[in-house]
Image 1 (cartoon, rainbow, N blue to C red):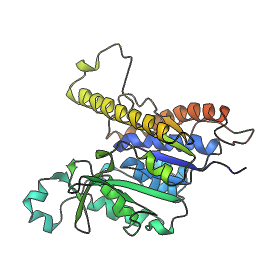
Image 2 (image 1 turned 60 degrees about the vertical axis):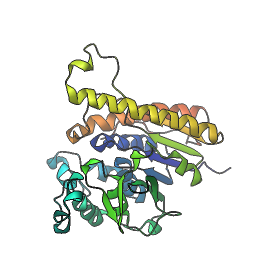
Image 3 (image 1 turned 45 degrees about the vertical axis):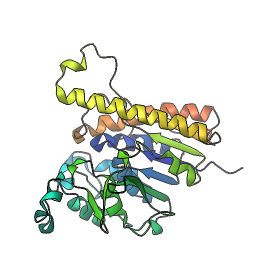
Length: 304
């Protein structure tokens, strides 16, 4: 009896996407090894790094305090993303005004740190989603789709948050964040042959607070509103996919991120722990239902 083919689908969420690493930590400890990685924005970064074999501890190490680091690996600081415009963009005022920053700097950094920058040479199936702004449709990068575009460029396109970054140019086509079209692309994982789809969703709204969020300022209200909107889209998407693909198991993991902001990378440890705990609970429950063929004894403990 073959083991089920597992896919990991990661949503976006900027710095909050660090929680995806906690979900993968729980997967590792339970002996669950995804073979398919689908992601947009932060989820695309995780798929492009962990999905091609960069060890989890190396990725986590990038968020530790400098004197506690043990590895030389990718470190995604805010300065990695916010680049200045190129000369040709300065001469195009319409395009220059389409976003505050350029993702060219981020693409160059990713190109340097990725062990492999070719979808066709990665053992696992890594799939990245973006949106073509002019065609108003989802674009897929990876084996079976556009596999010729370098991984670094596909991920940069997928990370292009509208307004914050200028649409990312790939061969004359301009791209935005993959979640502009769909909050998650679990359907892509099913088409790639997944039997089990683990969804790591970091848009869970904050609930149950004594003091109303309405009294916490406009940024908190906007953050909560965005989380409500994206969570509702994600929930409806999962329900639809489960109905359309009844033989495929969907495990929806939505850690309680709390009020951590989208740019707060200093909360990395808390985000990882929250992702880890939520995933452990959901995955153990799935194990008890027989979704996974897991080893009889597993070592379960918090991430370092």
